[in-house]
Amino acid sequence: MKMIIAIVQDKDSNILSNEFIEANIRATKLSSTGGFLRSGNTTFLIGIEDERIEEVLSLIKKTSHTRGQFMTPQVNMDVSMDASAAYPVEVQVGGATVFVLPIEQFHQF
Image (cartoon, rainbow, N blue to C red):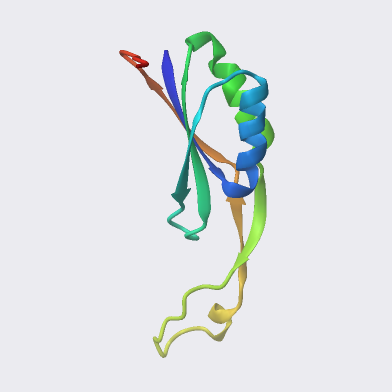
C-alpha cells in the first residue's frame, strides 16, 4: 500500500476530484497555499493499493495542466533597481507535485 500526496492548482482540483470519484478512488481533499505565488492549491491524500498507483498517477497527469500566469515582482526600494523590474512577468504555474510514500499500516475506524 502507498500514500500518494498530490498538490494541484485549485483550477484543476474539481476535475481531478470528479475523476477520482468515477474511478472509485478515495481521496481526502485539503486546501493549501503555494509559497511562490501565494496562490490557492489543493492537496489530495490518497491511500491506494500498489497495483493502482499508475492509474492514480495517470488521472493526475491527465487533469493537472501547466499554464502561464503574469505576476508583478515585489518592488525593491534599492536605487540601483532596473526600471523594467516593475513590469509583470509570465511564470509557469499549475501541473502537479506528487509524492508516493510507502505505508506500513492502514487502519480505518
